[in-house]
Every structure is written in C-alpha cells, then in structure tokens.
Length: 155
Image 1 (cartoon, helix red, strand yellow):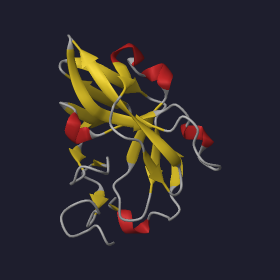
Image 2 (tube, helix red, strand yellow):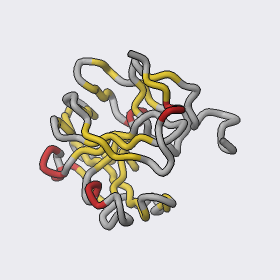
Image 3 (cartoon, one colour):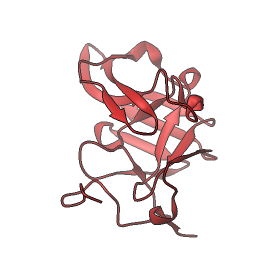
C-alpha cells in the first residue's frame, strides 16, 4: 500500500523499522540490523537509524564535516568510513545527546544511501533522497514529492 510522506508528522515520529536494514560500502557491510528505527517527518523519505551493536563501528570514525543542528533532534555529528586505507567522508551521522523525545536515537547511525554502494530495506535496494543534506531512504511504497531536490528548500 502506498505511503505518502505528506502524511508523516511534524515534529518527526520515531518508529521501529520491521525490515532488515543493510548498508554496504567498498564491498563491506557497515550495517546489518533487524532493530533499526525509522524517523518519519513531513515531506521527507524516512531516515533509517541503526543501533551501534549492529554496525561495524571499527570502520567508522568522527568526520571533519561540521556538525549540524536539527530543531527537533539536536546536534548531529558526522561519521567517515575507513575501509582498506581509504577514507569515505561523511557517510552518516548520529546524535550522541539527542533532544528530549528523541533519546532512543542516541548513538544510532543514519547513513546517506547516496554515499554508499548500496542500501537495502528487506530485499529492496533503496534510492537516495535528492540533494546532499537529507539522508532519506526511498522505497517503492513511498509517494512524494520529496523535499531535498532543486527548488524544495523553502518547503
């Protein structure tokens, strides 16, 4: 059944993601989880947060990318991946001390699908949300239009 991103709430809701989540980069599975969370916010494809226990944290490190501020979730810090001696800049982000109401996201990592080789929800390979700021995971059941592409900054 289609799911319209325009039916998502504002402020965003955090719900369990029932499907297996996988994120791959440079031939390595960085994330493999059945315990991920979805953040649902009006006009955005869901962002997927993977708990630290289901990540290859040995391959992730703090990024030099400047932190950013979400009016709902707080300060986000970015993560690089280092695989085989190669550094992949700002492949994901996390909230180490999220704002009230979003504590469940503490330490979980959200990946930008467009900065990975592949990302999956269940057996479906996801498409990346347009633009370089948002990290939504687009699947076949989602209906837009989606914020992030050219001309959508003022939505």
